[in-house]
Image (cartoon, rainbow, N blue to C red; front, side, top):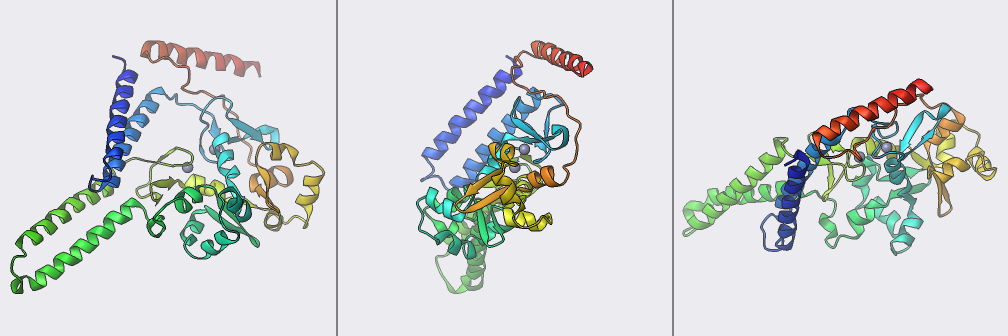
Length: 344
Ligand SMILES: [Zn+2]
Ligand SMILES: [Zn+2]
């Protein structure tokens, strides 16, 4: 059996177990934890499969600092078009909208989101899922699924890991209370026994999370997160690179201030069509009455973007699963790209 087939089979078996666990989740204690472990194992297997199928050299997205996912899935901007922005980063940028549009898209009450940003949604600001730009707030579409779509909103922004810690802490408090009064109570033996067993079980789960054996994947760019404790909201994860991409999104006015352009420059040049190609690529857009731009556009048009040497794109697609075939196709791809390099 080819290595790809066996990994595929493993992924399939894990997914079946995962679906079964979802169906039983109402009666399965700590369902979120078990689902997450299964998910982690699925991700780990996919990761290994990708490592097998990925060639060492690939086109890099210079905005998000990750490889471009597939052939042609990027745009070139900047001087000589050497600055590459991948479609995944563009998608991330396009999902940022003004609060009015957000409310309209999701049938929420007028001005309710602004009020929530000042209270319950505050924790999302430092992760750039919500950004203040001058007087307006810009919000990422995922906030709808993270918060508004959840039935239990009080715990919506807690991660399932926090929930495990909270439960452990509460059980330990109960254990302490029992210890203090156990001599004056009778018939507490089985309660104390069950409490200890639950605490051991939770400690075991927490240690698995802490010992770094779980792999995490960014919910946005789907890149692997190497650092130990990534940001979690529920089961949503976002990596530092994606947060950095989001940090460059701003209103025209804020961009003019940041890059010391005369007030109104962007509005005027936008009306004259000078920014059209960036608009078509989704790096500038209008949301409600606010124009939103990514700072790389301002740098490309009015300042300078760092220049990069452009490498050809190699991807795992179309590589047959047989390793022999694979190495042959790798050789041919490298050979072809060498030929095309020499033509330049
Ligand atoms: Zn990217
Ligand atoms: Zn990411």
